[in-house]
Amino acid sequence: MSAWLVILAIIVLVVLVAIGFFVSRARRSAGLRNRFGPEYERRINEIGDRTSGEAELREVSSRRDRLDIRTLGNDEREGYSERWKRVQSNFVDRPDQAVMEADILVAEVMQQRGYPVENFDEQFDMVAADYPSVSSNYRAAHLIFERNSQGLATTDDLRQALIHYRGLFDELLEESSVRK
Image 1 (tube, rainbow, N blue to C red):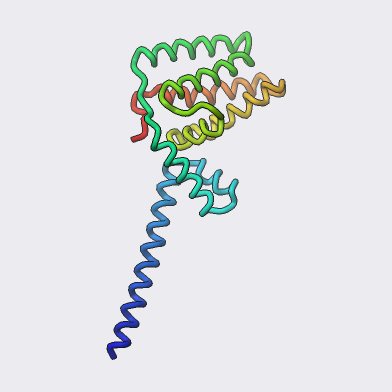
Image 2 (image 1 turned 45 degrees about the vertical axis):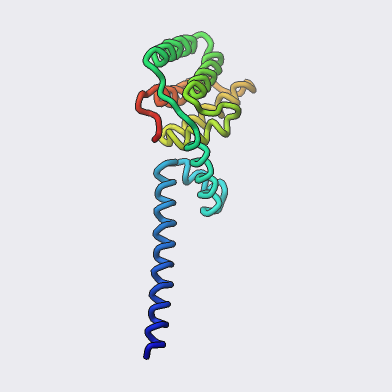
């Protein structure tokens, strides 16, 4: 009879460990989905494997969490806001130039705050980790920026890019936008 109790205890233990594993995995997935928003599903679909996609997003989270991101001071925010107004006003006469200036200004603000800006993919990963609601727009803006450099973007494309850049720019300037 005691052998049956031992077997039953082992079975219960295995079931509890399995439940714990699946609950932990579900929590981890939910945390990544929450942090990365729409980028979570895009990345999983792009990679084609949930386990590999989540591993990549955990690595992005880890890189982001090691950064020392700072809030901009009031004077810095005001200065960048004034520069953005000039970028917008330039759009009327030189939409292609305004989009290039917007891309440069967004990168400058990111760098000032402590984000890496050496390449777009790294910039995008950090945006996706901290600003999931505007990350897909940032990607779209950058794609238009690249098409523009090849002379393939329409004025309406450029207008849309400027709107997308503005969304991220506003987020970057927010006083409370530093992820803890």
